[in-house]
Image 1: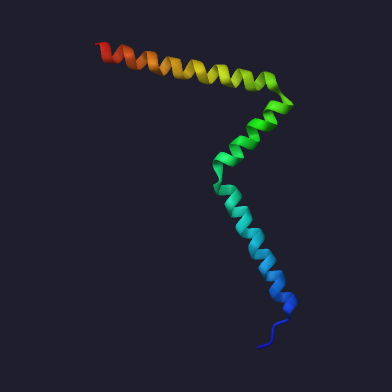
Image 2: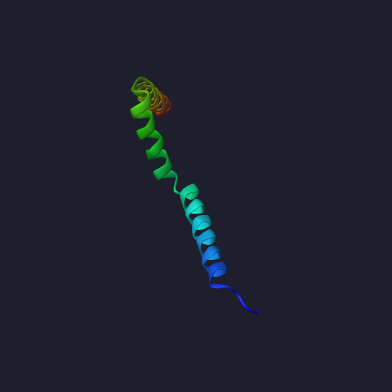
Length: 71
Protein backbone atom coordinates (compact mmCIF):
# COMPACT_ATOMS: atom_id res chain seq x y z
CA UNK A 1 0.00 0.00 0.00
CA UNK A 2 1.62 3.18 -1.22
CA UNK A 3 0.37 6.59 -0.22
CA UNK A 4 1.52 9.84 -1.74
CA UNK A 5 2.84 12.44 0.63
CA UNK A 6 0.36 14.92 -0.80
CA UNK A 7 -2.55 12.64 0.20
CA UNK A 8 -1.24 12.49 3.75
CA UNK A 9 -0.79 16.25 3.89
CA UNK A 10 -4.28 16.83 2.47
CA UNK A 11 -5.86 14.43 4.98
CA UNK A 12 -3.95 16.10 7.82
CA UNK A 13 -5.16 19.55 6.70
CA UNK A 14 -8.77 18.32 6.48
CA UNK A 15 -8.53 16.79 9.95
CA UNK A 16 -7.07 20.01 11.37
CA UNK A 17 -9.90 22.02 9.79
CA UNK A 18 -12.48 19.63 11.23
CA UNK A 19 -10.95 19.82 14.72
CA UNK A 20 -10.87 23.62 14.50
CA UNK A 21 -14.54 23.71 13.49
CA UNK A 22 -15.53 21.42 16.37
CA UNK A 23 -13.49 23.48 18.83
CA UNK A 24 -15.18 26.67 17.62
CA UNK A 25 -18.65 25.13 17.99
CA UNK A 26 -17.93 23.97 21.54
CA UNK A 27 -16.38 27.26 22.69
CA UNK A 28 -19.64 29.00 23.59
CA UNK A 29 -18.12 31.85 25.64
CA UNK A 30 -15.89 32.85 22.73
CA UNK A 31 -18.80 32.79 20.28
CA UNK A 32 -20.98 34.82 22.66
CA UNK A 33 -18.21 37.36 23.09
CA UNK A 34 -17.84 37.65 19.32
CA UNK A 35 -21.60 38.19 18.92
CA UNK A 36 -21.64 40.88 21.61
CA UNK A 37 -18.68 42.67 20.00
CA UNK A 38 -20.41 42.52 16.60
CA UNK A 39 -23.65 43.83 18.11
CA UNK A 40 -21.78 46.62 19.89
CA UNK A 41 -20.29 47.69 16.57
CA UNK A 42 -23.40 47.24 14.40
CA UNK A 43 -26.24 48.29 16.70
CA UNK A 44 -25.30 49.77 20.09
CA UNK A 45 -28.94 50.67 20.88
CA UNK A 46 -29.96 47.01 20.66
CA UNK A 47 -27.09 46.06 22.96
CA UNK A 48 -28.23 48.67 25.48
CA UNK A 49 -31.79 47.35 25.23
CA UNK A 50 -30.59 43.82 25.89
CA UNK A 51 -28.59 44.99 28.90
CA UNK A 52 -31.59 46.83 30.34
CA UNK A 53 -33.83 43.84 29.70
CA UNK A 54 -31.40 41.51 31.44
CA UNK A 55 -31.15 43.88 34.42
CA UNK A 56 -34.93 44.04 34.69
CA UNK A 57 -35.19 40.25 34.52
CA UNK A 58 -32.58 39.80 37.26
CA UNK A 59 -34.23 42.45 39.43
CA UNK A 60 -37.61 40.78 38.96
CA UNK A 61 -36.21 37.40 39.89
CA UNK A 62 -34.56 38.79 43.03
CA UNK A 63 -37.75 40.62 43.99
CA UNK A 64 -39.76 37.41 43.48
CA UNK A 65 -37.38 35.41 45.64
CA UNK A 66 -37.49 38.03 48.40
CA UNK A 67 -41.29 38.02 48.35
CA UNK A 68 -41.37 34.22 48.58
CA UNK A 69 -38.85 34.14 51.44
CA UNK A 70 -40.79 36.72 53.47
CA UNK A 71 -43.96 34.63 53.45
